[in-house]
Amino acid sequence: MADKKKKNAPPDAQEYQAFQQQREVQRPIVKNCIKAFFVGGFICFIGQIISTFYIYFFHFTEQTVGNPTVATLIFITMLFTGFGFYDRIGQFAGAGSAVPVTGFGNAVISAAIEHRTEGFILGVGTNMFKLAGPVIVYGVFSAFVVALIKTILIQWGGL
Amino acid sequence: MQLGKWLLISAFLFTLIGCGTDSALDPPSKQRNEDIDLSEISTDQSISQEPSNRAKDILSHYDQITTIKAVNSDKEILIAIEIKHMERFKLAKIREQLTKEMKEEFDNLKVELSTDKKIVMELDKLEKNLKKQVYPKKDLQKKLNKLVEFSKEQT
Image (cartoon, rainbow over all chains, first blue to last red):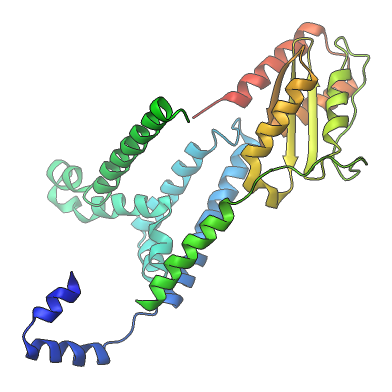
């Protein structure tokens, strides 16, 4: 798509693009990946500590411990977002801090904080799920599609 | 761009390699694995713990297992195992295979096999209590029933 557009562009624009591409600062993909890997891994490590804590000291099995762990992580993220600390982590780690459930929490909470001045209903209420809404919509939708495929495979495929 | 392509291809290949495991368990060795954390419980309880001890004996021949706990009533037996860390990739398969084996071994009992850490801990507690005191039949049954239900709890 993008290549086709480039070919149709006037020669001046093409020349400019070549010029621009030479001087553009390259995105450090490998470095970003490593950062994201370690910070994301560290967040998951904290999550593992929390779930082990719940297994040892409360009445949860490995099956049921997921819910309180997620709730705790999101609660911690809420505090970090409110104190402006999570933004720094996000700036440094990128996807490493956005992909775990803490990123989802941050997306909800930062939107809520941002629109607080517009009032509780039309500000916080309408804007809270601005970024998290698509996650929920497509999460539910893809779960539906996968369930449909599974049902079809089991019913007619004899899996 | 070039790098991204290579990353994608290698990720795909690693996924394929990771999926290519066949039998999850090594065949049982002839010798008992002495590193396994298990303790036989006395058979002079109100309900003989002989089936539990037999289950431990059978399972202790697998090298991948690190902990075995088991307690039985006269209707059911609850076994909890832990396996070596790297083997956890095959956890579901191993659990399935061992459950099948145990079901064949104890066809007169209802067999529950769990790999859950919490169940291992709870069974350990119960085993220690069984060593200290003799449980009335009903109490043991009740306790075991509760644990079996607990092990099946879903979110």
